[in-house]
Length: 164
Ligand code: MN
Image (cartoon, rainbow, N blue to C red; front, side, top):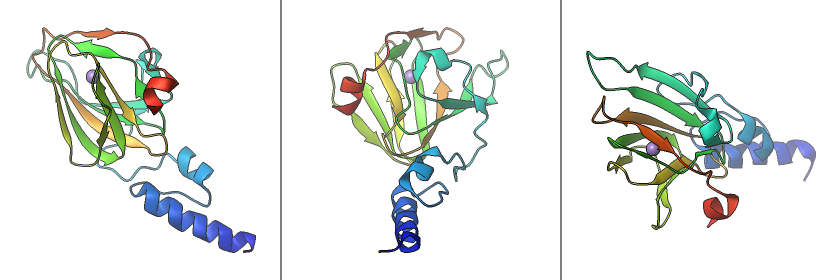
Protein backbone atom coordinates (compact mmCIF):
# COMPACT_ATOMS: atom_id res chain seq x y z
CA UNK A 1 0.00 0.00 0.00
CA UNK A 2 1.46 3.37 -0.97
CA UNK A 3 1.41 6.37 1.31
CA UNK A 4 -1.52 8.08 -0.41
CA UNK A 5 -3.70 4.99 -0.16
CA UNK A 6 -2.72 4.56 3.48
CA UNK A 7 -3.60 8.18 4.16
CA UNK A 8 -7.00 7.84 2.50
CA UNK A 9 -7.73 4.63 4.36
CA UNK A 10 -6.66 6.20 7.65
CA UNK A 11 -8.87 9.21 6.92
CA UNK A 12 -11.85 6.99 6.23
CA UNK A 13 -11.33 4.90 9.35
CA UNK A 14 -10.60 7.99 11.39
CA UNK A 15 -13.69 9.78 10.12
CA UNK A 16 -15.85 6.75 10.72
CA UNK A 17 -14.52 6.10 14.20
CA UNK A 18 -14.53 9.77 15.14
CA UNK A 19 -17.95 10.29 13.69
CA UNK A 20 -18.65 13.82 14.74
CA UNK A 21 -15.48 15.74 14.09
CA UNK A 22 -13.55 16.65 10.99
CA UNK A 23 -10.10 15.12 10.71
CA UNK A 24 -7.43 14.87 8.09
CA UNK A 25 -5.12 11.96 7.35
CA UNK A 26 -3.93 10.10 10.38
CA UNK A 27 -5.27 9.08 13.76
CA UNK A 28 -2.80 11.54 15.28
CA UNK A 29 -4.40 14.35 13.25
CA UNK A 30 -7.77 13.03 14.29
CA UNK A 31 -6.87 13.32 17.96
CA UNK A 32 -5.58 16.88 17.59
CA UNK A 33 -8.40 18.23 15.43
CA UNK A 34 -10.59 20.67 17.33
CA UNK A 35 -13.17 21.29 14.62
CA UNK A 36 -16.03 19.49 16.32
CA UNK A 37 -19.33 19.05 14.53
CA UNK A 38 -21.65 19.86 17.39
CA UNK A 39 -24.29 22.42 18.28
CA UNK A 40 -22.53 25.17 20.24
CA UNK A 41 -19.15 26.85 19.93
CA UNK A 42 -16.38 25.29 22.04
CA UNK A 43 -15.52 28.54 23.77
CA UNK A 44 -12.20 29.27 25.40
CA UNK A 45 -9.88 27.07 27.40
CA UNK A 46 -11.65 26.05 30.59
CA UNK A 47 -10.75 28.50 33.39
CA UNK A 48 -11.26 25.63 35.87
CA UNK A 49 -8.58 23.61 34.09
CA UNK A 50 -6.62 22.96 37.29
CA UNK A 51 -9.44 20.61 38.32
CA UNK A 52 -9.17 18.64 35.08
CA UNK A 53 -6.67 16.29 33.40
CA UNK A 54 -5.99 17.19 29.75
CA UNK A 55 -7.34 20.14 27.79
CA UNK A 56 -10.97 21.16 28.08
CA UNK A 57 -13.00 24.11 26.80
CA UNK A 58 -15.93 25.95 28.35
CA UNK A 59 -18.65 28.02 26.73
CA UNK A 60 -21.12 29.34 29.30
CA UNK A 61 -24.39 29.34 27.39
CA UNK A 62 -26.24 30.93 30.28
CA UNK A 63 -24.33 32.26 33.25
CA UNK A 64 -24.93 32.12 36.96
CA UNK A 65 -27.41 34.87 37.83
CA UNK A 66 -30.25 35.45 40.25
CA UNK A 67 -32.87 35.80 37.52
CA UNK A 68 -32.65 32.21 36.30
CA UNK A 69 -30.45 30.45 38.87
CA UNK A 70 -29.59 27.90 36.21
CA UNK A 71 -25.98 28.00 35.02
CA UNK A 72 -25.66 26.09 31.75
CA UNK A 73 -22.26 25.41 30.20
CA UNK A 74 -21.05 23.62 27.09
CA UNK A 75 -17.95 21.61 28.01
CA UNK A 76 -15.65 20.06 25.41
CA UNK A 77 -12.95 17.51 26.27
CA UNK A 78 -10.02 16.53 24.06
CA UNK A 79 -9.42 12.75 23.83
CA UNK A 80 -8.42 11.39 27.25
CA UNK A 81 -9.38 14.58 29.10
CA UNK A 82 -11.54 14.32 32.20
CA UNK A 83 -12.54 16.11 35.37
CA UNK A 84 -11.01 15.34 38.73
CA UNK A 85 -13.14 13.40 41.13
CA UNK A 86 -15.66 15.88 42.53
CA UNK A 87 -19.18 16.37 43.81
CA UNK A 88 -21.86 19.05 43.56
CA UNK A 89 -23.83 19.92 46.70
CA UNK A 90 -26.89 20.65 44.55
CA UNK A 91 -26.34 18.00 41.87
CA UNK A 92 -25.75 18.29 38.14
CA UNK A 93 -27.35 17.10 34.90
CA UNK A 94 -25.22 16.31 31.83
CA UNK A 95 -26.69 16.36 28.31
CA UNK A 96 -24.38 14.63 25.82
CA UNK A 97 -24.08 16.35 22.44
CA UNK A 98 -21.22 14.68 20.60
CA UNK A 99 -18.47 12.10 20.76
CA UNK A 100 -17.85 9.24 23.14
CA UNK A 101 -17.49 9.97 26.83
CA UNK A 102 -17.02 8.38 30.20
CA UNK A 103 -18.86 8.78 33.51
CA UNK A 104 -18.18 7.09 36.81
CA UNK A 105 -19.56 7.35 40.31
CA UNK A 106 -17.24 6.36 43.15
CA UNK A 107 -17.36 2.58 43.69
CA UNK A 108 -19.31 1.88 40.49
CA UNK A 109 -18.46 0.80 36.94
CA UNK A 110 -17.42 3.34 34.32
CA UNK A 111 -20.31 4.15 31.96
CA UNK A 112 -19.81 4.88 28.26
CA UNK A 113 -21.65 7.96 27.04
CA UNK A 114 -22.93 8.82 23.57
CA UNK A 115 -24.84 11.65 21.90
CA UNK A 116 -28.31 11.92 23.39
CA UNK A 117 -27.45 10.46 26.79
CA UNK A 118 -28.65 12.26 29.91
CA UNK A 119 -26.77 11.79 33.19
CA UNK A 120 -28.52 12.89 36.39
CA UNK A 121 -25.97 13.25 39.17
CA UNK A 122 -27.55 13.44 42.60
CA UNK A 123 -26.27 15.94 45.18
CA UNK A 124 -23.02 14.96 46.95
CA UNK A 125 -22.33 11.88 44.80
CA UNK A 126 -18.60 11.70 44.07
CA UNK A 127 -17.98 11.23 40.35
CA UNK A 128 -15.98 12.25 37.28
CA UNK A 129 -16.81 12.77 33.62
CA UNK A 130 -14.75 13.15 30.47
CA UNK A 131 -13.85 11.95 27.00
CA UNK A 132 -13.02 8.45 25.82
CA UNK A 133 -9.31 7.87 25.16
CA UNK A 134 -9.67 8.32 21.38
CA UNK A 135 -12.64 10.62 20.99
CA UNK A 136 -13.42 14.25 21.50
CA UNK A 137 -16.47 14.67 23.69
CA UNK A 138 -18.97 17.46 24.34
CA UNK A 139 -21.67 17.71 26.99
CA UNK A 140 -23.83 20.44 28.37
CA UNK A 141 -23.64 20.83 32.14
CA UNK A 142 -26.71 22.05 33.99
CA UNK A 143 -26.13 23.06 37.59
CA UNK A 144 -29.21 22.21 39.63
CA UNK A 145 -30.52 23.55 42.93
CA UNK A 146 -28.69 26.84 42.47
CA UNK A 147 -27.68 29.00 44.23
CA UNK A 148 -26.99 26.53 47.05
CA UNK A 149 -24.87 24.35 44.77
CA UNK A 150 -21.13 24.29 45.25
CA UNK A 151 -18.65 21.98 43.58
CA UNK A 152 -16.08 20.31 45.81
CA UNK A 153 -13.04 19.31 43.80
CA UNK A 154 -11.08 16.24 44.85
CA UNK A 155 -8.08 14.30 43.52
CA UNK A 156 -7.31 13.69 39.85
CA UNK A 157 -8.58 10.54 38.16
CA UNK A 158 -5.44 8.46 37.73
CA UNK A 159 -4.59 6.75 34.43
CA UNK A 160 -5.18 3.40 36.17
CA UNK A 161 -8.69 4.46 37.21
CA UNK A 162 -9.41 5.96 33.81
CA UNK A 163 -8.32 2.88 31.87
CA UNK A 164 -9.97 0.21 34.02
MN1 MN B 1 -19.76 16.87 37.75
